[in-house]
Length: 152
Image: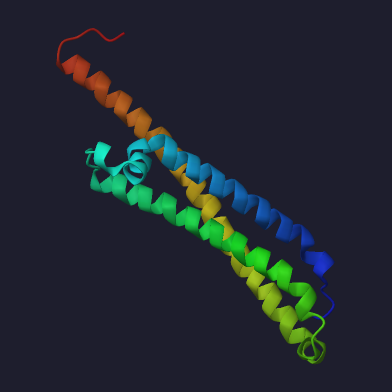
């Protein structure tokens, strides 16, 4: 493992940083767009009286959890990249270079796995949103048919 250098993983670090920022942005927009009352409740709690279903609460928790996980990944990357120049100049690193490299690679792989989970949640949330819209449209069409209205 000692033959792996920082240059070898630089592209992975950049991808993780960019993906984390993208996920952070997308999920933040999802929360603000789909649940504007949730955002309004934080900003102006006295103006919002709407209650959310249990499913909506769980969805918001999932979205916020992904935002937090993605921000945590980005934080670890920033700390790691900032600390690297100082760590490699220590005597402990010089005498245990292979152990430090192993921990660094393991950490990057763990962050990559967590980031892939976040990407999966972004995709799954998008697909669920489309399915929810389709189901809502089908329910409205069925309701119109049962009420005797013409389908347009």
